[in-house]
Image (cartoon, rainbow, N blue to C red; front, side, top):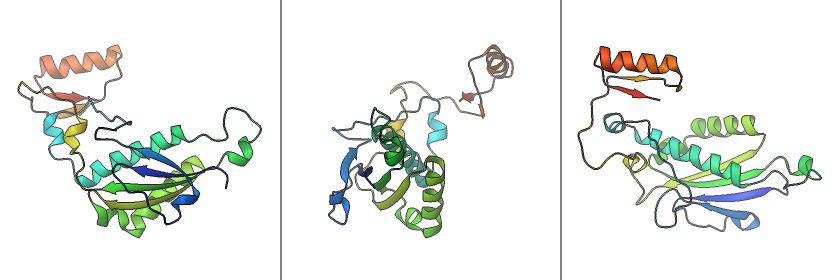
Length: 181
């Protein structure tokens, strides 16, 4: 397959077990050399305090998959080789917090089958233990000062007048702390 990449995520080390045959793509979400930036402005501090490590891993995995999808072309700018180069083989090495969960065969199979179905690409994942990685709070930009308000509910907010009316009713009339997504 001509369109193959090995994607090293975070602080994953470069290995020689088959990766040498592939073009390399390094993606970092944290640290001095980070080139991928993940921020969520729609969550509040109380919500983020209880995010399970598996969910934090999933957010990072999804970010790496998305960025790799954008970075690895399907045949370049022209249309000559689009058919031959449409399908890509992507080998990810991703550090995770909950290594035992991501190494389970049922989880890995579901992840690979879902992504392959959605993209027509061939995915391979190697999960390694995350050492010295970010906490989920590193992705949530909160003011350093001030008191966080307790969130009593989450409300969809499209930016339209109907959403604005609902938000005003919840906050002003009902005096509820809400997070809008």
